[in-house]
Amino acid sequence: RGEVSIYGRPQSDLSVRSKIGYLPERPYLYEYLTAHEFLKFHWELTGGGADFPQAGARALDRVNLRHAEHKRIRTFSKGMMQRVGFAQALLRDPEMLILDEPMSGLDPDGRYLIKDILREEKKRGRTVFFSTHYLSDVEELCEDLIVIDQGKILYQGPTLDLVGRGTSRVRIAYQLPTERSPSELICEQEEVIGALQGLQGQNARILGMGSEHVGLEIAFKSLRGTKDSGS
Image (cartoon, rainbow, N blue to C red; front, side, top):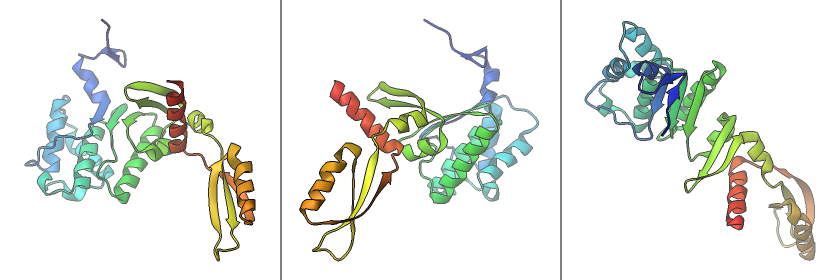
């Protein structure tokens, strides 16, 4: 048995609710309510207060939904529903955001908007904790991460440290005598000599070589490969 505390208070203390903004992967939205009514409902759940008109307007402004404030949620697109759920998480100007797949259902403009908000919250000193399958979002937004695979923690620490673990890759530009256009080959660093020998065997002309960016997706595959080889 143990105890859970949030900002030094027991998790049963209702006052800590206002310090946490939460967005689940599949938020249940009362579609018969308007965006304004939905936020007012959640405002009352976390303690109420006289500041709702300003807080509600501010939250809707941040997710670009002020124009739809008095429209019923059932008329919203999937992206608008996701954004009104995000507005709910921002409503109390929380010290911590806990977000599950926050980019789900968003178009490119919506993704850019939410990423921009998360960067703003980070600059303000807020803690942002989110889970996602989009590793490019993690690489772009997170200073630290935890990689979980089949319920086991494979890595916990700075994002840049994990990316730095990725095997360096090399891009080779070449042209075969039978082809009119150049081609490219990407290989691991330890495979470069073999790749060059293979191209020379085809009488290929080497046009250039350069390092290939090792992103988080490649580092993740390398991490899983290490796990599989050790099991």
